[in-house]
Length: 116
Image (cartoon, rainbow, N blue to C red):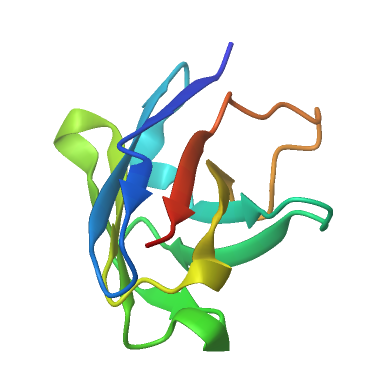
């Protein structure tokens, strides 16, 4: 049984930074492409970035140059370093496989609020 636990969210001022973590269990983590997703109020969940098992990364255009996805396979953990945050980055952030698990499973997510 796969379990994903996101953490690290919070309230930050525009221009600030946050580092999100995603702890995974119940899967061969190093073999998985891991993704970060977000869902803003009233909007559909969207993909933000993904990282392959070997470390190749891809980002949605709106976060390129500001967000960095990484992983530590020894710790079964993926990270999302977010910098130069904008109010439009406000959302609940989730991690999942990329593409997401067909079972429809999602963790509880972590809230990121960018506001002055």
